[in-house]
Each structure stands twice: as C-alpha cells, then as structure tokens.
Length: 305
Image 1 (cartoon, one colour):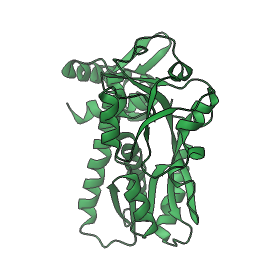
Image 2 (image 1 turned 90 degrees about the vertical axis):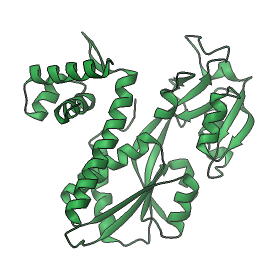
Image 3 (image 1 turned 120 degrees about the vertical axis):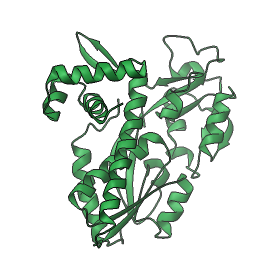
C-alpha cells in the first residue's frame, strides 16, 4: 500500500468518478485507474462496482473508505500536532464525539480542514459514550460534542448545528425467519422482540424507534434496553431480538447481521448528527470552528445515502 494508492482510492470514493478524481489530484485518469487496480489486487478485494451507470463503492470499499479516511485524518492531526508543538498556541477547543467509526471519521475530517486554516489553535478530540459526552458538556469539560440530535433534544441553553445525517435501518440476526426475505419492511416485524439502545434516557416521544414503528401502526415490544452499545450489539449478534439503529460500520460489516434501510418516507428516517455547545460559551476559537464546520457541512450532501 502506497500513499498515492490511498489518495487515489479516497478521492475516487469521495467523487465516485474516476475522471473528476484524476482532475482533483492533477494526475491522468489512466494513472489513477492503475493505482486503484493495483490497490485492489494487493488487497484481494473489489473496492468499486463499475458499470455503464457509473461507479459505486462495494461494501468492502465502504469499510476501507471509512477506516482509511479516519486513519488519514488522524495521521494529519498527529503531524500537525507535532509541528505545532514547537509553536505557541493561540486558543484551544476541546471536542468530544461518540466512539463509532463514522462519527469519529467525519469529525476528524472537519477538524483536519480547520487545523490547516488555523494551525495556531490547539485542538483536543476525545471519544466516549453519550452519557459522558453530556456530562462533559454540562461540566464545561468539552467546548462542544458531536452527538445524535435526540440525545440533546431536551437540553436547554445550547446551540446545535447539524453536520451530517445518518440513515436508519432494521438490523436482524441471520437466524430470524425474515433474514433472507428479499422484500421486507418494518411492519413485517411487528410481532418480533425489539432491543432498545437508550444511553441517555431518551423519552418515547423523542425516540426514533417508537416514532418509526408508530408510522407502521404498532408499538414495538421492547424485550430489553441497553445503555452500553457493545452490550446492545452483542445481544443483537446473539439473536435475542431485532432493532432499529443508524447505519454504522460495526453493524453493516457483521456477516451474521443484515441491515435493512428504511426506504419509506417516515419521521426520523435520517438521524441528524449535531455539533452541540452551550450558548454561554464565548470561546472565540470555538466560534471560529463553528463557522468553518457550517461551511464544511454545506459542501456535502446532508443525507448519508
């Protein structure tokens, strides 16, 4: 694996267009095609589906793109941090985010771009559970946190800014009788046991699980609730129930599970992931970061399809 292979792969994954990616990287299309082909051969994986309609990432390609984006962003932050260690910082922001790969990767990309513009500002980023994020925000440990909107919907005195949307879907174990059914909707699972992930004591009226099931005309029969994501995911992996969850690599990469996106136009089909801060926080560096994050999010499609 070379730096050029990774750069070519990530740019094609972002553009889903070889010609545009080559133009952005200032190299020929034939060269970028060679780099992708050699990268796929080295990995023994097909990273893209190519047909007359265009290019799209395979499941393996999605996993590689998320992970390499995260690693690249982290590497750039480490390099910047090392360079800035000999400089005197002028301002500091502390940001917390959920531990999931997609959330962390997206935030790292935003922070990396901000660091390029404002290298004099020290950036501290941490990953932890939703409860610790909320506690850290309330206690002024974090200047801002990146978290799902329903986890902070009832907080007072905060400013929220949506960075991206995460798709919601049904996750079902392969032992479930509907696992292999081609055409399936949530209404087919009305008699199933549901598992609920509720790390921050979200009320029923705010929870996408109840709101989406209500659209299909039933209330989910919740067999168990979890405030720890690993325990929650393990119970799903053990076939103890089905659930609604927003799309994460930990779910879609598990061969024992099937993630079925909600395709109907229902409430909370997409969960806003929001950068949240206290209104009374007057940290100028944080205000500058919010302004940059707003521009960054406007450059990207809001819905993560």
